[in-house]
Image: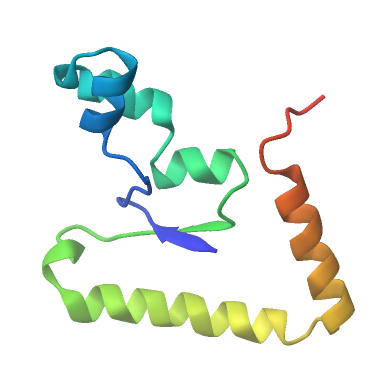
Length: 104
């Protein structure tokens, strides 16, 4: 699983989270930091495997973004196809078992 470098992932907006947590939606920046919703945050937490780097002004060029995503998917599928199904399943199982656990 990968995310674009400048993307975020959340089931709730920072404003909504701030409204619930602080009873003040204007504290959205503080809420966003606590939510850990950036690609960098999710990589550090082990939720995603990779971050797809973005070039300057890439958000304005759909072809460039699509090309970077295609390169990532192609390389990842090539690497995953080298694994036995059982090994792949075990790696995925272990990855998801670790999410949310504190490092000792």
